[in-house]
Length: 165
Image 1 (cartoon, rainbow, N blue to C red):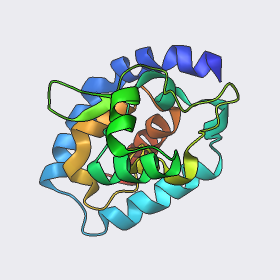
Image 2: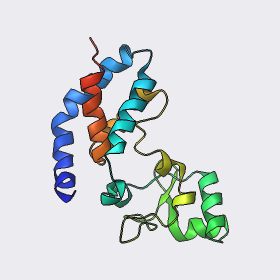
Image 3: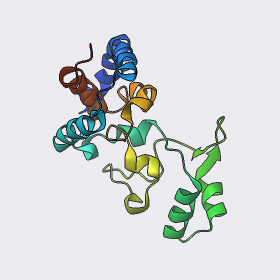
């Protein structure tokens, strides 16, 4: 996995222009069943993906924390929401709550999430390759292919299966 992760930024950079053109075409001519096709591609890639052997998303990017996330996680940790914010979060330049530091505070040494059952919505949905209206998040997907080997595979599989003329 380390070898793949060390190559991923370069692979993503090398494919960036190709992927951007593909997504630009997809926005203009998305098949009516795009979300169904994406779900199928997502499922097939994630059947052979072991996120625990990677956890690169948890090590290199921090999720946004919604107020609902903060309330839920604070309750789970038996803290008041403001205590949770003060201890773990800060407000970024977009005025969103994000982690104070990376890798994620809640990632243990075996790549397990210590708050998995109450993790933020952004973590539950990452890398967003099975999201409805997938073609609306192409910029996010272009970023995620450099972080997540599975997202990279999903995009490569998309280009094979979903041909746009």
